[in-house]
Length: 388
Image 1: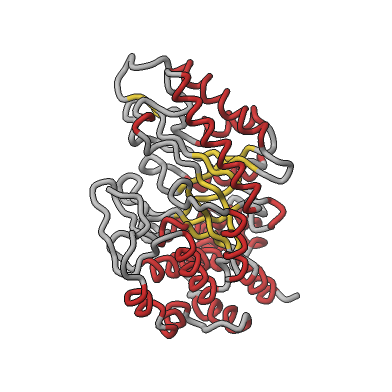
Image 2 (image 1 turned 90 degrees about the vertical axis):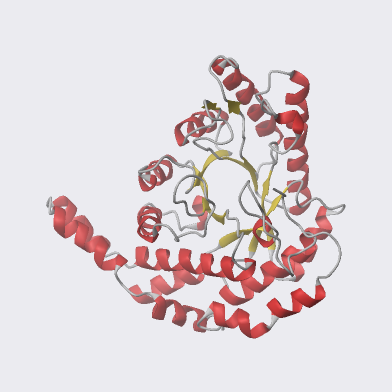
């Protein structure tokens, strides 16, 4: 297989997981702006996700968020997804929107609150069983706002106990993906504030526990690609939550703030074998589309990941290794920059045409008339969303 053929094959086989909540009304914690045609239930979210898959060919998996995507029949929901060429991906637990969790969920001082949170996490594993989902994705808003508010070490003990209980409940083919966040809403201490804390807990739990890297959950200037390379080396990178940030956790479209950073991340993914399905790395979007149209924003995000991946695949690995070994600092950097500065849009258009798709996913979606139909058809009922 030629080098170009290998690159095209890798791009055609790429899989990007889209989030159910991005199809609904979502946005900032201050205000969520409703849009006409937004799905009213998880089934309509899957209808929209199918349009993204039809346009891109690389987004056949949809993550769910519980209780935002609660249904009576999860096996039926999985079957509905399958009929539309989709499968259900990560089950995202929610232990941050109940009044009981004001002082934390699994790290709360009150055992009754901790039990409530734990029961929800275990219920999410039940949903995984019903849907065939592989991943349980955990993010905790737990932390403290004031010095002395709670015992920092005791909260880590409570967290470890809850994680161990959930870990034991997982099936042989299921995983726990532990996310982290520098701050917000806990401003003094956050119980899982960084990749090191997540990694330490996952290391102790075992091989079915891995770290999720959310590209918006870091301090300014953090070298995210170093984290990615380290976790891949250790076999502990479970997946990504792709988005962009300008200041904090803005949940903007991936590649919007710093496309060069996304390229650098994908370079480390390619360099360390992370595109190989055997590694299990899940490439998920985690974004809130508040002022932009939902489906086009998701399609554009998928395209942004594709472009960064294509450029990473075009890095001349041999030339880069030779320059690094020779200590040729500028030459090594130039090899990376040559790949980054390549216009990969014609290459991706060829990949899509080879897959029987339109060369421009945005144009392909517009041509379906779906955007206009959902505005007229989805009238009445309550739009899906998470409030604010």
